[in-house]
Image (tube, rainbow, N blue to C red; front, side, top):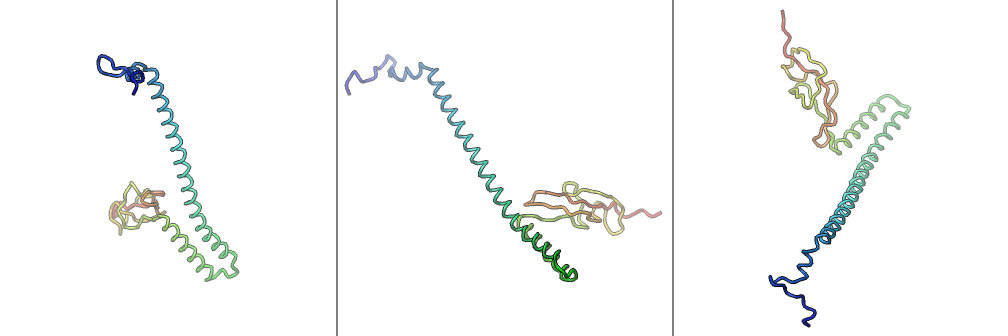
Length: 170
């Protein structure tokens, strides 16, 4: 290399270009700010794309569930339009209920709230508390409305009557 093209070496052994980089903090701050702004723009784009992808996935799942429920709705419509409202109607309703129930279970729905089980205020809503001959204290004596979970998350609390134990006789 030609000596004129070499970076001069200072007394402390460092090159003058390195010293120039260190001596210009405004330029260094500008470069860091530019890098920061680009990174923030990339992150904003990532968040936007991730949000759009999540929305597409949710829409696809909703669409699939709706398609399955349409079958049940159409079965109800056929049953209601049937001329024979006797045993065939009841059978049709039972078949529709079974189909609807299987679709909901496939999508993670589970019912809970059984008569005789221990009352848990975290998952049950006590609507009534009364003595019971057959049910021990703090146990569900009657289920007014079932509770439901979807994939372990409560979506509807069970509404129950709770036993306060055996009635006192005078």
